[in-house]
Length: 314
Image 1: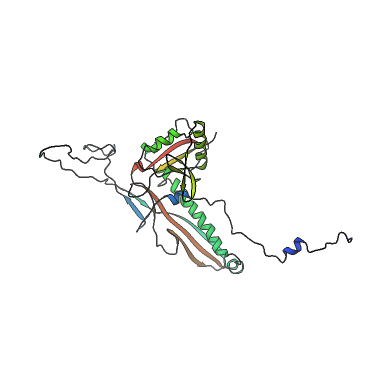
Image 2: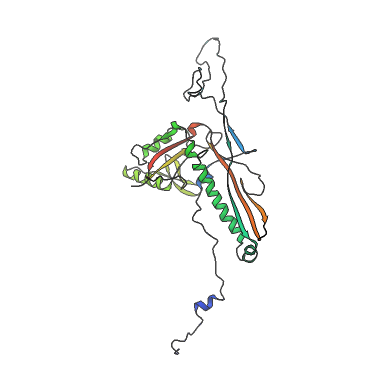
C-alpha cells in the first residue's frame, strides 16, 4: 500500500464497532387509525350479553290484526283533537316476544416469548413489551374487522333490507349520499373504504360540487352535509371493484348503533382486552394469552343504512 492509499483516519466501518446504533420500536403496516372503534359509544355489559328490546313488529309469518304505525310496529291506539268527554280507547305498547340478544365475540392470540430473549436482549427496549404491543395491535385490528364484516353481527350484515340502497350510476355521487342520509335522522357518521371516499370526491368534482371538510379528533375528514366520512380499510372491495358506504347514528339515547364490551375482566390491559400470563413451559418459553371481547348492536332498523355496489375505480 502506497502512502497515498494509506488511510489518514479511522474509517466508518471501524468506528461502528464502538458506536451504539439508535433504533426505532418495531413498526407494522397492519396498524390503522381504527376510526370505527373511536366513533362507537361503548356500552358496558355485566354478563357478556346484551338484549335489544323493541316494540312489536309483526312479520308475514306472524301477522297481527291490530293496525300498524308508519314504522310497521303495532300502533298505540289513542284519541286526539276530540272535544267533550268521549270514551278514550284502551291501549298498551306491545313488545317483540323474541328480542335479539348479542353475545360478546372474541379475538385471541397466544404470544410466546423465550425467557432467554426477554432476559438478555431487552436493552434498550423491553422485548416482551414490544412483542405484546404488536400482538395487541393485531388483535385490535381483528376486532374492527369483525365489527364491520362478521356475518352474525357485523355492520355490513346488520342493515335492514329497507335501509340498503345502490348508487344510481354505480359511482357514488352526492345524490346517492343524500338518499342514504334521508333514510334516518341524526346520522352521526359515514364509514367507507378510502378508495370509495376518493371515488366520491371524483364524482363531486365531475358534477362541480365540493364536499365538506370537518375535524374529528384533531384530523380533517371529508364530509357530506356536515357528516364526516370515516375511512375504514376493513370494508371489502369485491373482485368487480365495488364496495359499500355505511351511514349510522350512535348511542342508546338516540336509538342508534353501540359497541358492546365488558370491562373489569382479569388482567385487563385495555377496556375489554386482557393480557394474561399463562406461565413458563419446560422449554423456557413464557406464554401470554391476548383476548379482546366485543360486539356491536343496531338498536332500531333505521339507525344503520348501507349504500351497496359502489364502484371505486375509474
